[in-house]
Amino acid sequence: MRYNNYSSPDNFILLGFSDHPRLEMIFSGIVTVFYLITLVGNTAVLLVSLLYPQLHTPMYFFLRNLSFLDLCFTTSIIPQMLVNLWGQDKTISYVGCAIQLYSYMWFGSAECLLLAVMSYDRFTAVCKPLHYLIIMNPQVCLQMVSVAWGISLANSVMLCTLTLKLPRCGNHILEHFLCELPALVKIACIDTTTIEMTVFALGIVFILIPLFFILISYVFIAKAVLRIKSAVGRKKAVNTCGSHLTVVSIFYGTIIYMYMQPGNSDQGKFLTLFYNLVTPMLNPLIYTLRNNEVKSALKKLFWKKIGI
Image (cartoon, rainbow, N blue to C red; front, side):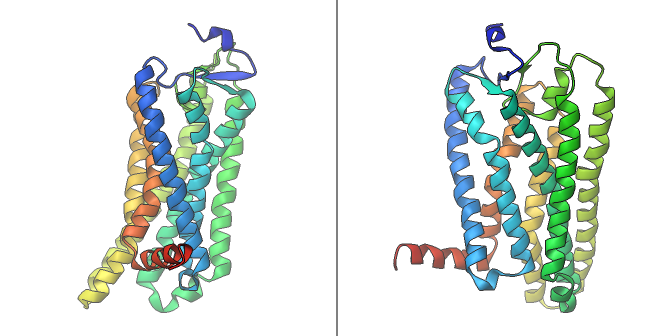
């Protein structure tokens, strides 16, 4: 293989779609556009939720965290991906690969837990509206987010450290766009059953358990909405939860389906690209288009910036 000369303990080869150069050119343009939209959209949500006092509520506190998380998630992956797509050099240093791996696992795990926390916030808002601000006080919100980030960091450190310590016997070629954990496990030259079982177990903890918690929350929310006699009140409750439920459906639908695919298939690569780029881009659009308060704040910010 023509990449053998680049293989060394100090770098990895990210093949991606290197066998399809025209496809890489198309992808580089698409990824650039989507990444710019992701940056602008999530930055706008961060700014409006910070600058406007009417958005200083628990729901928008969690939304700020989601936007910040998506910015970190995509920025830890996309710039390096663009460098590899644009040029002939498909390498990434060992240190760069390690940083990307730790960041990818940390931010991905944190988003799973944060979406579960946001479902509890929506459950409290709909099912216990009179006690909402007491239950979801600033201290509790900060603690919930801190726990989500902290547990996710611990998960990342443990899994990624175990993965990077696996012997590769000189194999540094990854059939992927990025230093993803399954791709690194695949090139190990020893039996990886133990780490694969560990990944599976933690996958249940960070994917299925939060998803189960979200579904239970929405069962109670649905019951509460059906008890609302006013059509206006029912519509308001549905709109309150609709954006979050849409984001949950896209995020979990993609990640669960993605990990059911063969790790070395082109379809798996497309799904990874969707999960890492399209989902973070859609999140601010979904919350903006479905939320009148955010749309109003964005309009005020826009007109203020252009001096009108």
